[in-house]
Length: 144
Image (tube, rainbow, N blue to C red):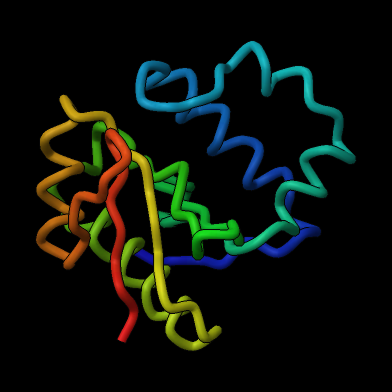
């Protein structure tokens, strides 16, 4: 398994795994497959170039995560692992990679939103040091 940072010219790689994720687990995202299927190539190219985009390759893409700047800190989003690859530590490896990158880039806080009933994801984030914050369904990590 390899964790790969997506470059803007690899926008099709990001598009394909993102659409797979939305099709496979639509209730886990704040967007929809229908909404993102109509993005143009230029919109995908722009999105691939914003913030940090990571995919896990085996050798095809099997997981993804993204992070982008927000006023309250770095925002981790789009965390997803294909069913066939869950339970292998991919989610942890992807989140750890984001946290390492955040520290290298000087971020002090990494935030995310995770549904309250998504217990496996909440356990993962807590194990990595995220804590619940005042806003419903939000967690944050203080970068040291």
